[in-house]
Length: 211
Image (spheres, rainbow, N blue to C red):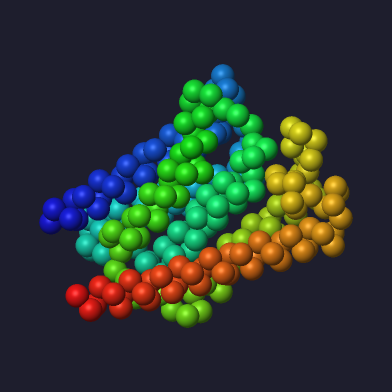
């Protein structure tokens, strides 16, 4: 019972700070709505985390079990990619924020991803992932890339003049061949990360069962 309460409280903290960060992202200055925010994978993955944990909290309260734990693997993978891509690829040239914007940036790129990973480590039943799950999880980046390509063709440019949210998918700047190569590498990165997650789950399951 105590672990269940701690589990729920931990997830509620994720939801509350996630909602704060996402709202701040949509209304960054003078409460003016910034539509561009929704097109970034950072915010889509953070919203996915928030929605998932809301459903998870409800499911734990009602049924005392994790909400679709295999799908949670996809959620964890997506938010982990947000953390890794930002830290190693985007942060060196990212805008330097202050105040609430700095707090929001830290939450969406570091705190929520790390808390989501630890939620799996601390609270989830291990050994539930299937060998094909990481391949199914890859539907998330594939759908996202299709989404931003369609948006670029029919939507308005971003405030920086580009039709693409990230420089490495800017067909106008780099050409279709280079962008497809970048997308292939990123998709493979998703797959590798997914299988790392799968084998960690196997390892933890075997380790805990030996105790």
